[in-house]
Length: 294
Length: 325
Image (cartoon, rainbow over all chains, first blue to last red; front, side):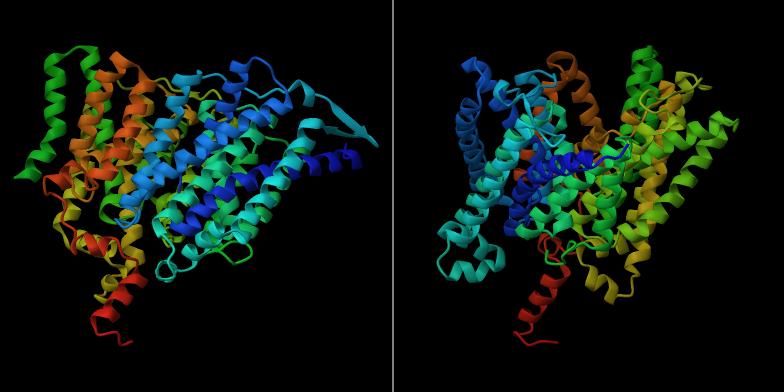
């Protein structure tokens, strides 16, 4: 039975999911656009931050939305400095080497991360259940869960903040200049290696934010990383690699498509369909739907 | 001399296992031979032609499923093991033509997505076993599986030796090191790449078919699992790619350490160590153990490996004193 309420609800769910995807994919897209580094462990870092927040809340022993936001701050800082250090001390060493060595470098992380998380946090599926958000408004028959609304607002805020960082600050300018032309940026006095490191720091911070939002809305387990990585890739490729506005649009498209398909056609083949689309887009439109990627 | 030794290694493993004779030794040897076959076949496309194939497990899984489906319909088992590689080879031809046009990371992600898609389909379709797999009443005993697996491993090694010693191998390496230069010398890049792809699918799909007869079960989550591709890459990186010695060293060391460490420290910690080890390898020994020992011979050394065709043309222009054309 297709009712208007169901459609509206699917659209709202889809937008939330889409913005979460967009944030996850923005990090991936930045790293690719600036350094041509493909972080195949991106999803694992998303899951890591969800677990860190879960863990902090467990230590503090109480769960409220203010507290969740509070512990998100150290998580973001941990992830960002991790990203900064990985780029500064490891990836910068090999970035001039054979082109795919950075891919294989992160591939190592892709193997070690899920297992490290199983050792640290156990193999179980978790959720960040915040009692304050575990209710829903009902407006004209449309059920709006508070956690979805909160995530929607939070995600929009994060995206605006990221775009502001990229387009309105000095470091954002340095990052974009490096992406456009490395040599020219270097001549203009930009420290390339530092710009690289800042980029991966921002990318990891975005991963941790999408970890928070994903954790608030979905269950997560240590082995869920690759699915987030692949979906983020889908978004990045759909929007055009290294083109942030395209990435955001593509995130919304994927979120909406996935929710609408699973609401009205069933969940069975959603992932098979998404992966087929990813393959076809890579084949037919490798520069993205808008054709603005690299 | 090295080639002769390399091709006799599967036989040596079989002899050692049968002399020992315990079911454990047989199982261990079969496992090692399976990984040798898989890693060698990955080497054909990733090592010689230079395409990072993150979906290599799809050949294994497709081999497993075509074998089971044929066997279920009354085809005799030797025939299934011959027919399934042929089917998978045509599959490789069909998806190779469009996919191999993609470069570097694009190819890696596209094939990864494709393998995941196949897994999702098999996990959701009733006659492909869905979430519970297809049980097989296996017609082979463990010794027969061991001998056949040794045969597949030998075939995989032989393919790579033949590649390395023929015009084919020089063409592959030329394509890997510099596409523009290779095409200038009259190598049909597309055809050669697809040929390498088809060659790499043969041992992988045979190993998949045998694997199902071995464990008596075809489950999509197992035969299409991304972890299998991960392990193949670990072994390949460890041994070094682009020669037939590297995969042998890599897979033997991998299976040995896996068995020992897995028993003593558990799978998780082992995989953590493995991941960190890959990171270290990429940082400090990017051409693997065999590269370290001097087995990898790129036609043009490291510099050319790191250039895209566009960059190569730019360098060429620079060399000519900055003039275009």
